Structure formats: C-alpha cells, structure tokens
Length: 105
Length: 120
Image 1 (cartoon, rainbow over the protein chains, first blue to last red):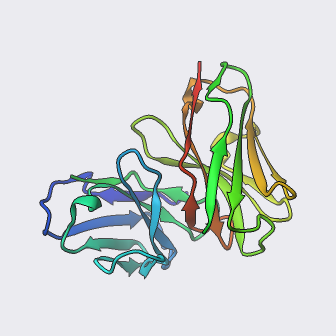
Image 2 (cartoon, rainbow over the protein chains, first blue to last red):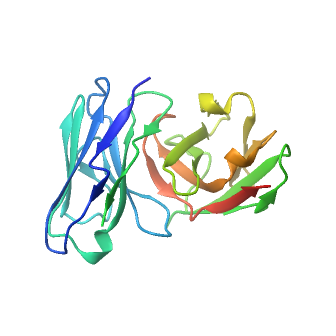
C-alpha cells in the first residue's frame, strides 16, 4: 500500500507570504498526484491534477511540482481566502488515497 | 455548470443501513469519461475514499469497507447512491459525492456540498 505523508502538519503564515507544502509518497507514483483545498465549512475542491496542472478556475498563484515520490504545492502571495487545509491524493492506482493534510493558518 | 447534491437521512441507528443519494445536474451520469463516487470525512479527520461506480455499473469499494457497501446508478434520474449496512459510530461523518476523472483511481474534480450522517 502506497502511503502519502504531508508536511508540515501546520503552516502559520501571513497574507502576502508564500506557502510551500510537501507530499511524499512511499513508492513511485510517477506524476499521478492531485492537490485539494478545503476551506472551513466547505467541501474540498480540486486545485492541481497530474502533479502540476491547475484545474479550471484555479488562480495562477497555485502551482504544483514534483514527480515519483516528492511533490510540492506552492501558494504565492497568500490571500485570506487561501487559509484552510490542503490534501494531496495519489491517482496512480486503485484505491485512491489521501494524505493527512496540511493546515495553512 | 456541473452540480452534485447529496440527500438522505441525517441520522441512522447503529447496526442499521445508511443510504445516501447524489443528484447530478449539468452532466450525464452515463458519461464514459467519468466515474461517480463517495468520499467521507469524519469529525476533525481527513478524507477517506469509499467507492466509485462507472457509467455501466462497474463498481469499486475501499478495502476498509469490506463487503458492507453497495453502489448503484439510476440513469433516468441522473442519480447514484451509496448503501452501507451494519453501520457503527465510526461510520459517522460528512459524506461527499464526487465526480472522478477518467478511472476509478482518478482525481475528484467536482464535489457535492456534503451531507452529515450520524450513526447513533
């Protein structure tokens, strides 16, 4: 079973700063990784698919990178609406699974 | 614009059956490009994949669910449903219906608002 480990657990930042979130897979998942944002009280929404492709309507300040086992989500110039929890998900094989999340506060 | 809307009882008795339905608008549930599924979130916890079903009824369930889950599609109503038997308090959580890209392992590109189901 491939496990996704997200770090850090919590990131404390101010608006205007940049956030760097990590997701590490226990085995090679190529570029089959997605990132999601969950704002308080809302459903998650897809930000990034295939490690680096922004989903429709996602601002350019969100960028994804990485391959194989190490992936990064970068949020530039944080806005107040960006604070929440971010999850990564492996999409290489069934069953899909999520990382434990990083809270950006 | 694609919308997914969950419905069902908010309270289920322990050892009973949980049934939730997702009504899809803005896309056809018989699309060959997508799967349809459910993701659960327990209080204060992360996201857990429950299962997916394709346009032609091929279904997949999380191993943690064992044989308790059952997915179905209602093509005329453009809906799909999850049924889970022998529920316990650990099945309490917000159930999100989702559209899944391409395969049963794909990313979840659209989400419903979620329905809170409490097992008591």
